[in-house]
Length: 219
Image (tube, rainbow, N blue to C red; front, side, top):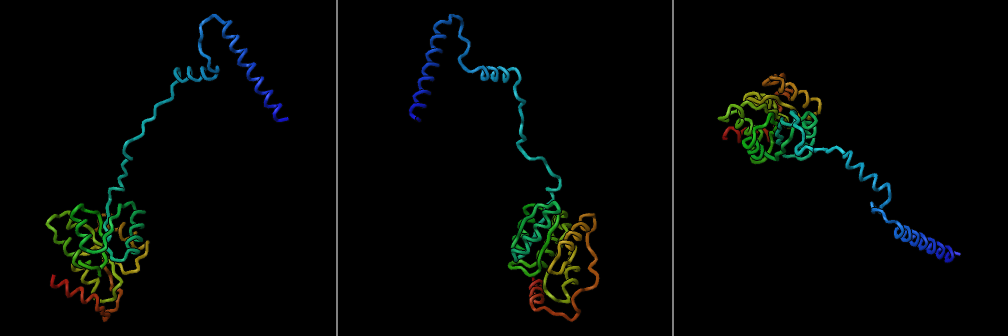
């Protein structure tokens, strides 16, 4: 049955081609186009009503918030990434640094709008970084807000951060609310956040902080 249907279709196709050839031989007028009529109409329509040309911008539109830049210096990757995510939500582009030396190099390469630095870092501590920024010959660099954070428990931390010109001190673990409030306050024209009373007991002593402080005094 299938073979009979196939033979029938082939015969019908041959008859159509034969009829077409006979009609073409009998027609003596000009040959316009042997393509289907819908194809001809489509091409004519394209010529009469061409589609509008769309020009795509070569560069993305400028977002003024993305011009704000932040350097985050912390030797703990998880903390850097968490702080960086919160700063990006505030509209900052973020540069990560695993030590104070790398952060200082980024500072001198392109001056940021704000710096967040841990105290206990290899090569260059947050205290060294803070003092270097404040003593920079470029007034623009020296005026960069520097937020210092640390998990060390010592009664001298806030006092030393304030003496060196730190803009704010945040004790770890830092929450998103604390960071956002601190950054918003400093970017509204305020140079420093009052440190208030020390959250650490006055008699608390951290051997690690005292080691950093002793190295700092020799710096």
